[in-house]
Amino acid sequence: MLQPIKNNQVIKQYDLEIGKIVFYKNYLIIEVAEGICFDYEKAKQISRLTDLHYKNHSFGYISNRVNSYSLEPIDYMRIKNIFPNMIAFAAVIYNKSQKASIRIENMFYQDGIASFESLEEAVKWIVLQLENKSKLF
Image (cartoon, rainbow, N blue to C red; front, side, top):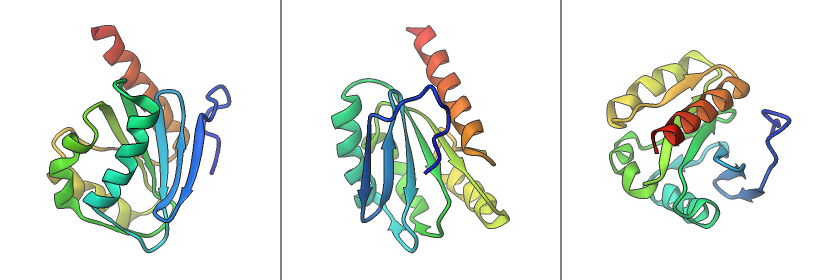
């Protein structure tokens, strides 16, 4: 996994069956493993880790889609229940098929998934969203 911004230190990295998850201070980057069907139950596994690392603090979620996998878009309707402290959701996409998938996913996820063509762009956007949120409180 690439280190997106030099100043952001990794808190913890997990190499799980569902993929790699790297936790930073205020956001995580996940690379779902090739061929996985990502669904509500797998999202709940990740939520246990976000609870462990972020507790009640706001965080951003970046899906770095370097591998091909399937997902259940309908499960996005329940994502706020799984990640109540998630402020921003970004996906890094690498082809036209993934771009089309994001459009479909956005039909199910009300808060919207921002898509980017590089991990660095996604990280910058997530950090900005978190900064803007902290200014409100």
